[in-house]
Amino acid sequence: MTIARRELLTAGAAGLAAAALPAWAHGLAAVTAPINPFTLGVAAGDPQTDGFVIWTRLAPDPLAADGRGGLAGAVEVRWEVATDEAMRGVVSRGRAAADDRFAHSVHVEVGGLAPGRPYWYRFTAQGHASPIGRARTAPVGGVDRLKVTMASCSHWELGWFSGYRHMTAEDPDLVLFLGDYIYEYSYRGERAKDKVVRRHDREADIVDLAGYRNRYALYRTDPDLQALHAAAPCLMTWDDHEVQNDYSNRWSQDPKVSEAAFLARRAAAYRAFYEHMPLRPRSRPQGPDMRIYDRLSFGDLVDFTVLDGRQYRSMQPCPLPDSRRGHVAPDSCPDLADPKRTMLGAAQERWLYDGFKRGRGRWTLMAQDLLVASLQQTGKDGTLGHFTDGWDGYQANRSRMLSALAASGARNPVFLGGDIHSFWATDLKADFCNPASCTVATEFVGTAIAQDPPPKGAFDDAQARNPHVKFVDVTTNGYVTLDISPARIETRFQALSDKRDPQASVRTLQKFTVEDGRPGVNLA
Image 1 (tube, rainbow, N blue to C red):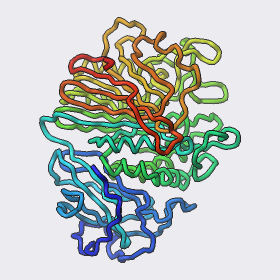
Image 2: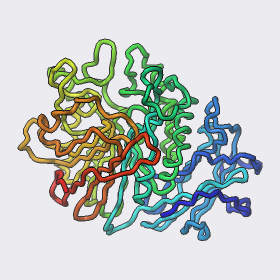
Image 3: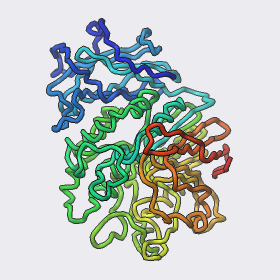
Image 4: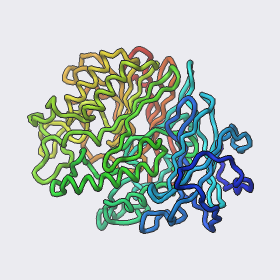
């Protein structure tokens, strides 16, 4: 599929049929601006059987210091959805009001469409037209195939986003963004030497709304990221760097930061996330709170569950005296297996376990941000233990989740994750301490699009100490592709030649299969 990159000036745009606008938005003047406001592209998300969400943000000056993108006041935006890329067969159209409250972002819920087919869409405003994007409605009934690509950990300064370009070339039906879509910190001084290939918009860590808005806007100006969003609808969750490294719930990684101050920062970060993602208006944040966990189905083939592993979790286990950052804690740390502690929060846990019982798809896919498998590691002092920032820091919640999954009868569960800047394929066991225990689910974790690998030697003995780990690679950047059919999932770990090369090539590092009715990783 070739995505049209031209900008279309539509003479008849002023005559588009109007959908209802908010009462305050009636009477907006038609303004022709000298600069195209569609600098951040378009995106679609949350595909349902009768529609999806389409998104854009008007920002003629995307890095304006105040975070407003160079606009003030309300702007009328017109949108249309067609059955063809040339936009001749328009089947839905309307108007929306973009205003200061949400940085002139637009989230249109399109409905009334036919299931299981592609559609094309665009926006017009201020005499300019956006790029044309493609979305796809979810199918009904029997589905023979679904192609999914997934990515995480994209640090603007450390590499180019060529992995996104190769994901677009794979022509996916759906894209999963599994956290660390942006990074809140920048490399400075000696730390930046020989590492930074392009600079962030500011050196200081971002902590306020203008800062988060501009960081998303900067990433959204990348042409490879824009092309991927224009090529297919997406689902997304966050990890920590959308707010702050290793934060948990209302607690900063820095114990000197008060809960009130950190929640103010989290509110700004979550608001900017909403403003730059194709989420439904029901996801609008309320202060520091924003629900992103969700589920959707693709016919009888796949039930997707999207989890939030940051907002509701208990404080990091056994924190160090001067930091709440993740670290390898010895197994004597009482928090690791404390049944009162949770990664997902009580409400999300109940919702998740109820969803296991309701699923009807051949495959049950969990889109979340972390490595789920237990991983015994060696700490800096040589002590064996487990890393506190991931699922190993919330072992009781993991046990509850895998037990509920096994008891529910949900078919063919597969967990998908990111965060760890490396490729992992694991069998998820009922009892990780007993290699002979039954395999409950399969797990694939993708490496970083553009981030450095884990510290040298950190996982040298990972497979020897953890026999449920079937494959690990800590040397490459890239992404993951899944070809899903009723009989199997074929998974490819796609490795980039060099994240510092904007024209990086890609190769298949390793292939895997998961067979229907047989949980566990098979090397292809």
